[in-house]
Image: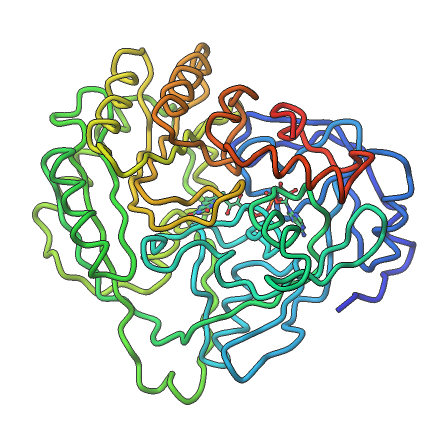
Length: 451
Ligand SMILES: Cc1cc2nc3c(=O)[nH]c(=O)nc-3n(C[C@H](O)[C@H](O)[C@H](O)COP(=O)(O)OP(=O)(O)OC[C@H]3O[C@@H](n4cnc5c(N)ncnc54)[C@H](O)[C@@H]3O)c2cc1C
């Protein structure tokens, strides 16, 4: 697994610089160091400075940021270390979704769960215990992990699984990098089946109808999500487009694989200004097209799983100030009322989200893991002045209704709100004391939330 070190001792090529969260609203000044093997990590661990594992930096907020310390990038060879006969692989933590999918496709296999981004690393995905558009059926990625190789601050490498170091195993999946560096993971995979999907695109006319569609389709289709029209001046806030898809089996893929390497699309042309008018126009057109075009369609699998990757630099439309994503989990009971109340809070403010997505979620894993039975509502807000006050109010509301905010997207929760949302946090803190007694692992998120 380790890469041979390039000339010039790369671990010493550390540089102190400003690093930003993916959505451009959180920043830190720290060192970023690539580590190619365990000796590299040990050097950092023994430096006496705080440190933090970092993947590809796709978390929106401050989870992968650390000021005044070292962000450690595991950098291993991009290959599968071992492949079992029973749909099981071991892979290095630094491999990206795109590379993993490509390597697995060559043997006719694929990941059971993917996020909407191709650049995320395996280590980053496990640390956030990511979910996909099939959480209601497949759970989070952590559900599929058999074991982890984890390097803790003492320098020891633990092989964790359900039967071995079970507490550390459980806490690491969703533990946002705060239990150590994941070096590699053994996980279950599934047959690729095919590279195309039969997709049903249905326009809805109200929030109630959107939720009804999500509720009924989430039992039937493999992947389901809804885009919600919630722009200023929308005819019916809460109406939307529900997209359901199933992979189409390709007999040829059964016996031999075929390369599937989804890639990020071309950059968007520069867009002058990104005002509400443009968003309203886009939303009306998108909803209108869904109404009038045929509902049944054939899509390349990547269009279903990674719609945002069609454009390379879409986040640039928010300009230098970036944007926030508010991703909450809403408990199942009275979900429609709760989502409506969240929308009412937003409507009472001067701000409107640009992109809103609603998904049905299935059973969760507990701990600091996000996915849990109910709905997840994601709203992207341009970073306008005063917008954080609205986010704070929304966080308060989500805490009150026993929902939670996804840590991989967060940069605005207070410690008090967080503790209400994640009641198992005390257990996590106790475990942290055991694996990291000197609190060497830190992030801006862990400092803000007292983790
Ligand atoms: C466009 C877009 C779409 C997304 N869609 C989804 C989605 O559908 N579902 C979803 O769940 N998430 C989604 N995400 C969030 C993303 O999947 C997570 O933030 C994921 O953690 C990113 O992985 P990364 O390699 O970039 O990790 P980073 O952002 O670099 O780090 C994330 C966390 O993981 C820790 N970490 C990283 N590597 C390691 C390691 N080797 N060992 C231990 N800890 C480590 C870090 O300390 C940090 O706390 C999306 C993000 C983007 C940008």
